[in-house]
Amino acid sequence: MKVLITGANGQLGTDLVRAASGHEILAFYGRSELDVTSATSVHEAVDGLKPDILINTAARCDVDACESDVLSAFDVNANGVLNVARACAANGVRLLHISTDYVFSGTKGCPYFEEDPTDPINVYGVSKLAGEQFALSYCSSALIIRTSGLYGAAGSREKGGNFVETMVRLSGERDELKGVNDQTLSPTYTRDLAEICIELADSDVVGVRHITNSGFCTWAEWSREIFQLLGRDVKLEEVSLDDFGPIAPRPRFTALESKGLQETLPDWRDALKRYLVEKGHLEAGPS
Image (tube, rainbow, N blue to C red; front, side, top):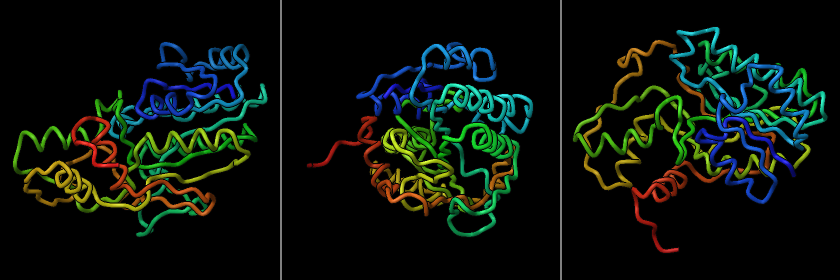
């Protein structure tokens, strides 16, 4: 299988390249190599390389930055996906596109399934939902993967790392921290997500699927698990998201579950422990 990956220098893209090692990989490491906002560039790449599948991870994912720069958010997260979908359709290429839990409002109060109505409350979520709709409308073989709370060894280039690394660093510098207790998500290790994405790439599954590590937690609960695994005695004050004064509104409960897939990823706590081992923050236990 010939696999074209956009955003291959991101934290998910990096793990996709690793997970696809048994296939022929066509990796584009960032916008300088393939700008998805340029229809001409995308069509030339797909026309010339003729991949079997294109996995699109290119995105503007800084939620507050998207709120402040609406045009840029839609240029990448919506129009960029339209360009990719059209190029895939024109060449008979399967499309796997990565989307987000932020297409939901967060008011359901329990995990969202694929058939639940979307209702994003910020620019990032609206732009990602538009991208989903373009992919499904223009490419009949498109598979949308919605996920949540990504963290991986490579870190997010746009965000300057990931939440786990931030907590590892801060808990080594301070003995008191704050943690958000009114926003719930499904933390997802990109290594686990990448492996199932490559499996699904070589399948006939289409439409929308939710894939995260199993279970869910608040940001405060996630922080506590990190501190416990590291053996660090940190006093965590639970606070509201509003206390941090984010620019963009955030949905408060966006844990995801799937009715469309039999596969389930390991529990988020198990994934977190394996990540900390991979990064060298924690010693591996006996096998």
